[in-house]
Image 1 (spheres, rainbow, N blue to C red):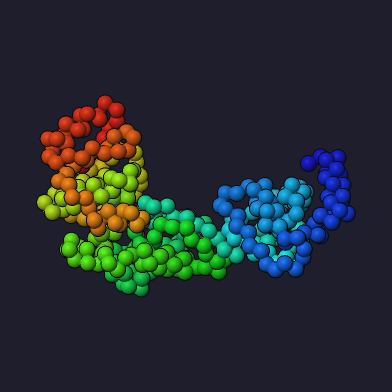
Image 2: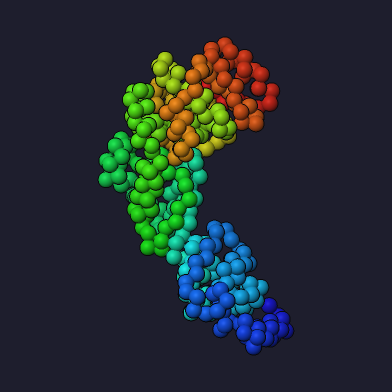
Length: 335
């Protein structure tokens, strides 16, 4: 900022101070002494958006001049997303800036449905300010794996997709345990009877649900996609699920190539019959319900249209006909 502009800005701030609105006269609510006030600053917020949030909750009186004050102090970029607690008796502008630089009392993170550990681990590490290695160690918690009766070496699929708030003192192990508790709370005990009916374990269902989560684009298709896989499992056909091949590759691609189908991995459901060893992502509740309660349909094949919806067929001949119908628009996913 030029010297003249700085002088003008300082004069403006002095005017605010004389009017009872400056850095040493910040209020929470209308008057001081109203108690503590929490302010949530979402991830990705600009300083301007944060200042607006502070003004709406009464932590600062004028968002625009608070932004100017921060800019003059060279601290308008000092901002961490999360939930802040401001003591109204101490919420002077310098103190507000210090809190924004120190960080929130709670940090918010959203795990989308269908995220795999490869995506969750770095996201969780950034949110907690932890090393990725410590998060990777937390998702290999042997006590949790044993408690959940999970036969795989990680908690892939068991970190329930949801929005979480962690305190600044939360460790990766604390966060992972909270996410696993959320998974447990979302599992309906009445579903255990359906497991017996299907002759499947909960791990089987979460594994299947993770594949459905990655395949389905339309909510109404989840039970039908589930039926295709159940029918294939019943008839001892390979699942031929492209997302499992992508998981085996360790990266997502728009198309699975023929050469990818030869990858040597227990997660390659083109080469191996039955379910893969474990989930390939974290499924949401809707996909878990679809895995438990498939539609009563005879389909064993499906192919995707460019808009994401699928054509379902009973026989391989019908399936190849369906592929030809959509091939002119895009390379379909084979099933």
